[in-house]
Length: 274
Image (cartoon, rainbow, N blue to C red; front, side, top):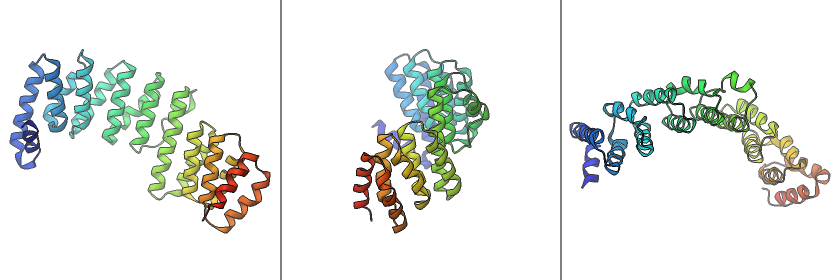
């Protein structure tokens, strides 16, 4: 029955009923003491809530009960009002708990509101690595440019360094989707050359091949010559996917000079190539 009431209230023609239901949920939420009932109200507000529920939800971000804070955060994340984004940004600046700040940053990123870029840019240089890393990735997911210079020029923790590389991959992917293959290739090449983590370099190498198959042959060969077994196997698979007689000839010419394992992988890949 309740599901039917909520579905009816979501109908744009039932705005009056929706507003009445939201007011009732907010009243129950503020007066109630039973945890399950309060969680129930918050879950409904995550579906029904708009600007009128932001004030109550924002206050609950500071509730002493972690479960209530979690569901209040989820309700604000899904709230379509720009006021919800501002409330999250304010809570982010007020909080001193790194884990909670990371949770708020991730909620802001999922809302994909460009207005959050300013506060996220500040936090990309935060002294807590987990907070800085989350902000760096959030900026990339929002489609923002490179992180602030202060983040890049100071010694970074392993967590932040990894986030910076991941963010570069996300920006490169977005540039490629927008048709700016030259800029995307430049970023992919930077990530590939960092040598940080097999999976990051594999992602960058795949991106280079997507941006320009023939142009990526030197990087594919470099990976095949290297000692990273994961990257080597990935490069062999990519080599088999690059079409054209010229690319195949370059791979076959390099084949005898490759390490034995790379020779085997590349030979198998070329035998299946189009």
